[in-house]
Length: 406
Image 1 (spheres, rainbow, N blue to C red):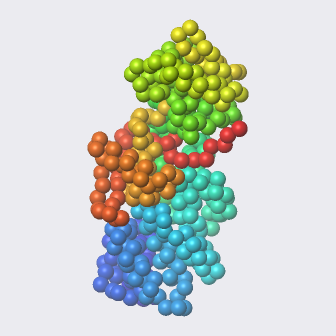
Image 2 (image 1 turned 120 degrees about the vertical axis):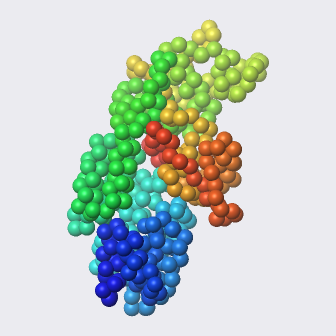
Image 3 (image 1 turned 180 degrees about the vertical axis):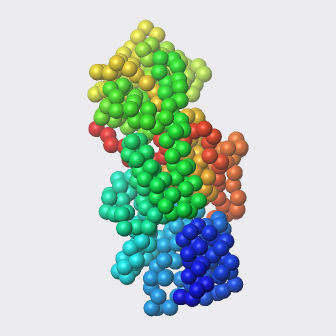
């Protein structure tokens, strides 16, 4: 490797893509193409970066398997950043195996971190945590240790373990300082800001207030009866009842939770749950059926009692009933939660992350675009959607995660 290639590689490692391009911008040999691709990725031109890395991978000879594998890892990172969730995971796994086989532990570990970040993005937190547990960051350079701690913090936040998240972010901050890469330091600062930003609204006793992720954690660990409108579950301490696939029952539970300790009139429940202005006897009959179903589902946590006017929630072994609501209410809040990361998303990637149909996502995006909340660029399969982050709020609780239920 000649001196210009070495100097360009050092510039990239120090977070100086322009310095790297000054040395290799006019060269078309395989190492220069790879470095140019990484530099363009750091500058945000992901399309050109992807093309350069693919050219570099083809240009490396049969004896340069490690260099080709590094190009694949870099391309995988571009796919993750550009939210190309359909990028072949087998290619990244094969590249990681090649790097491990040839002793390039730092880049092999980075490939693992890309895998974990992808799993975390689509809500497979258990699998991400298992993969992360196999990695030892101690022999890695400061930049890789920063990435490790950011991923650890990401898993902890999705698990609502805020103390562990803060500890990981403190370690990430120290590692980023050692790495002396401004972009990495900014990423750590952004992650720290999430923990100091309101994550939900607490509705109780007819009043509501914004609360942080730490307060959400404390609330869910308490003995309170919680109607969680972020995850569409009802819980008390360690007992969780999911109503994510039963929207009518969840709407009833939320209405009763917001009114507790009072009751909700029958006509008001019909209007709210069934979206009807006027209620007749058939609607009241349907309401009684749904109330019976809600009693059955919540029998371990609460009873639903009939009153003269309507129905009231009667929790078992819980002194308080609260509703945990998203910081901003929207019919398509989960879509907005993904778009709020500032990256551009394809509708197919959103559908994969949300485990729903692409057509459902497209309808949601069209509705949000009509309301001026999102914007798109490109056409056809190249069309991407994005939105500015919601000011003053974090959407952690709206991202998908498997919820353990009893």
